[in-house]
Length: 610
Image (cartoon, rainbow, N blue to C red):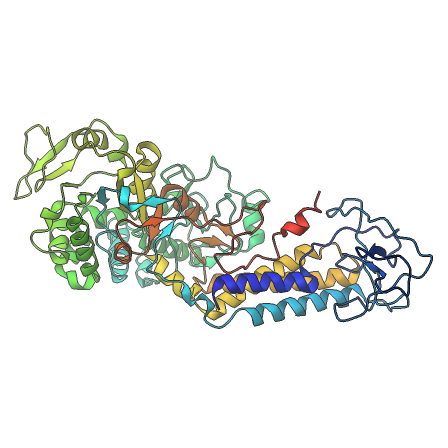
């Protein structure tokens, strides 16, 4: 069964079993057992005739103690002779005057308790979720897919640009551990931190990309697209901070004000966002250093710690340790070079122009590209720029280009053109545009850092942008599992059920809601932990997108797990963003599994909502 069929079936089944109409507020003063009569078209009024007048109602939930509701299999109640047709009453949304009435099998029907009705709806909905989602329904998801935030026609793209680190060259996870260990040594030897920090080994998968760090409070946390901290994802050192304490620290709210949050490039005065993959060992070292001081009851300044750890990580790069490790064992650290080779060959053979803009030094890039593509790798690129100093490369209009000779030494000549086969250092985008004439949507640039690589190009210069998000591979593996798909669908269905039955507020119903709320929180925690026990998915905070996800959709036209995903598409392919319903729109398109069908009213119901 396709996802479209699953969604359509679940939607239709919910509608035909009374799940399709949101409950409305009811006044206790209304006679709950009264009915509304309707007359069949082309019939005479009165009982005993061939076509009769029958009582009907569209009400969904009981407003009092009623036991038996009419079903499709039971005969409708017939109006007696002399009964008059009751005018149809308007139907209001919750809190609006006007109610729907319910029809019953007979005038002597026994009442059903509201609590029994709630559990019946609960069990029916849960059964539907299990029955209508076949095993393996989510296996259609593929980590090699390219996802579109904006429509991109590759036929219109003539020039392809690339970053190097984590774009042309993807690195193995073992690099993070080496960066962590060397920075830890710098912290102890250079900055004179306690030797006890040495005992902390690297913790793989403790952090995820896109987290925020409160510099003054020493807290690592996950923030959503609306600047709210996700409860349960705040860590001081290696220990979670209780939600109650988080509320106290932030003035009784989980909201982080804009002026305190990170700036445009993720570097605010009080909060920093870690956006690149190289930041994962930095966050881990920050966490273990905090943990050492806290567990040993040693007073320290979190601001000093933040600056020192940042400098220690920077020294690993500036002193060339990372470059040395990779160049000494290219097979270990660059595992998928054949994909880069295939992509470049394909683009050039189709007449595309290529360029490279990276912050890495030429000797390092040369070694890596030779390993992946061959000694003639420079022939693939029309322009190669190293040590570009991004993101300043995209905003600064002062630094000139300088050419490097074959030995990597700087030349003094003025640069009047950017020639194929040459290597250039520094420079700025304004001179780049002037010398190449490459402007607008005919340029597609690939990078992994949303701020340093993509933001300015999209917002200031109108280039097309493509984000490389290696985490998509692991996250897709989780989303493909039956456990996640079933749990998420039931979580959404339960949330919709709670939304629709929240007008039932007698003491028993309130207890049921408390039980449902507890189950909902457990489902949220379980689905979060499937990605990362501390911080969950990099794309979601419960139901909201993360701050990272918001930036991803804002600064990238398309995104993918690796550059190799491009091999799955023709170079005239058009990427169309999936049209998902906005909150105020009807779900008329069903191109994905309908996990929120209980949430959004259907067209028929929307006509009744005021």
